[in-house]
Length: 295
Image 1 (cartoon, rainbow, N blue to C red):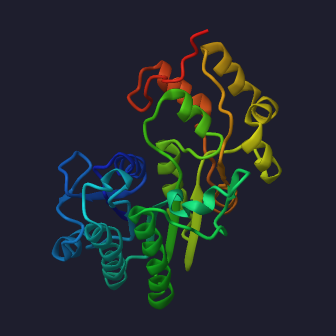
Image 2 (cartoon, rainbow, N blue to C red; image 1 turned 180 degrees about the vertical axis):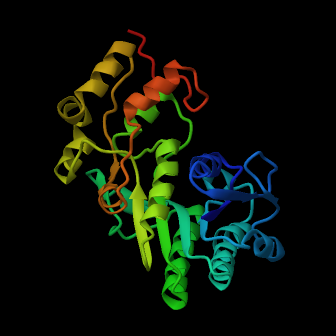
């Protein structure tokens, strides 16, 4: 099977490329030269897309402008790259006989809907997005257009909305693995599971770490987070206390990835312990603590 990964020089795209290359013939497309980039150029270049799509069975589309680009590029460019280029790629993929289209999206697009007043939000694929920024709006728009394309052209599309997945201070990353974060290795594995599952039609999944919480915790997570953590994640509490890190006063949301786990057969492996391991081994994936207790 031949797989094209767009955005293959990016941090997540590169991880997906390397993970999939163990099982498939993988080619990468990016505007940045890299060991995982086989086609170098702009995702808006149709001639390049035609060339890259030859013989491809599955497209994994990670290329996009992201939150850090806000304020540095125009809103028009956000729409060109995140929406228009995604539409064109999907249409060309369908016209060239691609059998499956996997779109790497973000839980960030739920925006204001993630954080209701007075309680932590419990976010599932049924939550109606309320985007905040141009990044959120364009990723949401791309998902909507892909659903229409899937229905019109009978192109199987799987959207994977990944939660927070970038280097942060260690205590924040570890905590977020319980409610709103994911390891890049688990993201890569989720893409492989989506390809192997080969679902028909249009499907959307949240990709986030396993949570010890359930919807009954939402009010207490917002008002007395420490009590919930001591009851639901005593191992994390012990690690924080041992290392002199302060526990948070509240958590404002939980992304529920149970649908992906149940339907795709995907299991996130790297919880908060994985963050601690990377930190102790001095991997650049985890930043030093900014929450060190002075007591």
